[in-house]
Length: 213
Image (cartoon, rainbow, N blue to C red; front, side, top):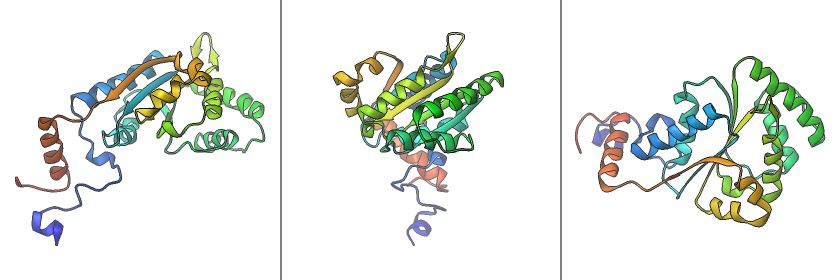
């Protein structure tokens, strides 16, 4: 009844993110440009933060499809994992074909995977959503992953995507070494009144609405 009344084919405002509804205003385009620059520069760490509801997760879901750079991408939607579980999640998602019993064994095989990708001219990208859920222990494991390089080039790009509180977490003494290695950062601000109107109209149009409401 709701959809028929408004002439829509699907619900335009579901709570879960859906990249089909991505609306890229100036702020979101700037964030996409920052992410792309992070891949091209190959500096290792890129940070995207924003308050709840600013569109971070939708942007992350859409990024692999909008990015014209050849990348092998794994997205971790919730990093509330033990360190070894995190590494084995990467192994599974990257198709490495095995489960590892310790970090050293994983790092040996992961470096081989990264070198193979580098030889094939493919950049490897790990996107960590909800980064504010990362523990200091897991952040240190991620820092170790970023140390893998070849001919002074970083072999894996890591994008942290999280709420504003992640900035405070990175400022904690155990995490400052990693914070200093973030090459690029971007914060998504809330939409203006004009942007909000454009955003609503866009979602209605994607949902099949053919008339102004």
